[in-house]
Structure formats: structure tokens, C-alpha cells
Image (cartoon, rainbow, N blue to C red; front, top):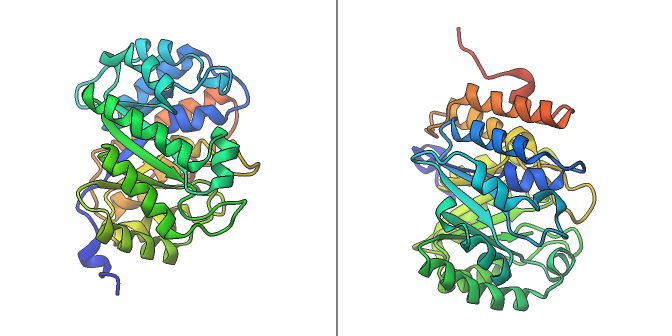
Length: 309
């Protein structure tokens, strides 16, 4: 039996903002480097403590993030704000290490399903794991925090349900390699709250001594419900994207991450501390909306925060 809401909800939650990487990479039109820098600086001023700012994936693969080095050099370093970069392999890590003083954490990734991993990075799961087992210790030796995110943890659009045993076996190898945080991605929005609750109940029993992070997409409108289900199992770390930016390059139709301001608004109303200034965060999302020239999907961006009178 899962613990009750009253006893399970954490007092505070850590948010990693992934919009500047996970969000921007899915935009069809290239965003100017100066605009990326300005938006990241706005996010840094909101009270967010963790921001994933760019990626060191090959520039010809994700053209939108080809300016990773320029972005890292240009953004303002604020005390108390940790910057993360996504690194797909040892080559990407070596590129990132040339700017070691400009970031704090490295995010590594692979998929829990063979088909999605092949379509996403053109490797088998085993090949990805071997590569990460070689890269993560190098990052740790350089004093970099290591987060590993397992995509399609709750379901694959090609293979259907992914066995939790398969997900946790991957997580255990990543922990053994030196990851201090494991993120579980609902990459195409297939999870439901009952599934999420059972998943994290088991994860907390099995994966000890490491931070567990949830990453939900709102593809089918269940993002916030899944956040609540994870909270009820004591999960205190989430990845989200301002404005509801993002998605997944494969397959088509995988829409954005759950919006950071929607998560902050909901859990703040529930009495959970995040340290984030919601009005400032909404301003950052409004600025992104202006840069992109289209309306974004965030509910709080449209309706504004709750104001009690």
C-alpha cells in the first residue's frame, strides 16, 4: 500500500529547468544565440537552482544547439545556480570539458527500449551503457555532478510497455558507473498516475543512495497528474521546461515537457517549497513566447498564477 498524501509529500522540491536544451532543440527555426543567452539569464534570476543550458551533441545532428560553446561563454554565472550540459558520449564530454569552469553538471542519457534507443542515438542499449560507463567516471574525476536520464521509462511508442526490471537494471549500472542522480523520462507522455506511483514506490526501495528524478511530458494531458503521483511517493526532484517547450525528435507528435510554471504553481499551492519566484518565471516564459513568435502551451502563462483575495 502506498503511503498517504499527508505523510508522503516532500517539504521542498528541486526543479531542473531543461527548456534551454530539451525545449530549444525541438524548435524548427534556429534561435539566435543572443536570444538563448538572454532567456537563460532570465531563468537564472527566478530562483531556479538547476538549469540545463545546452548540449554537446554533434552540431550536424542537432543544428539548433550547435552554438553550445557560445551559449556557455555568454550566460551569466549566478551564485547558487548550477548549470548542466547534456553529453551523449565521450566525444561530447571532451568538448564540454574545454569549458569546465562554465558548468557544474553533466547529463547523460539513453532509452530503456531498444527501438527508441536505436532511432534516437543509433546504438543498442548495451552499446550506450558501455559508452556511459566509460564517460561518467571521467566526468566524476573532473569534479562534475553526473545525472543519467533513462528515456521511455514508462512506455515506448514502438514497443509498448517497458518492463520495470529492464529500467531498474539500466539504472543500477549507471549508479555503479558513478551517477549521483537518475532521471526517469516519460518521453512521449505514455505514463498514468497509478503506473507512476507503483514505479516510484519500487524505485525508492530498490535504488538507494541516489537522487531519483521524474521527467514527464504532457503529450496526453496527464503531466501534472503524474507529478502528483510521484510526489505522493516522496519524489522531490523533477525536470520540466518553461512554457511547456520541448518534445522528442522521435516519433512525431511527442509534444512538450510539463511546464515548469505549471509545476511550480501547483506544488506551491500545495504548500511545497521550491524557492522559485513564479511571476519572474512567467516573465521568462512570456519572453520565450515573444522570441518564438507563437503561443506556448503553459496553462499558468495563459491564465496567470492563482491570486487569493
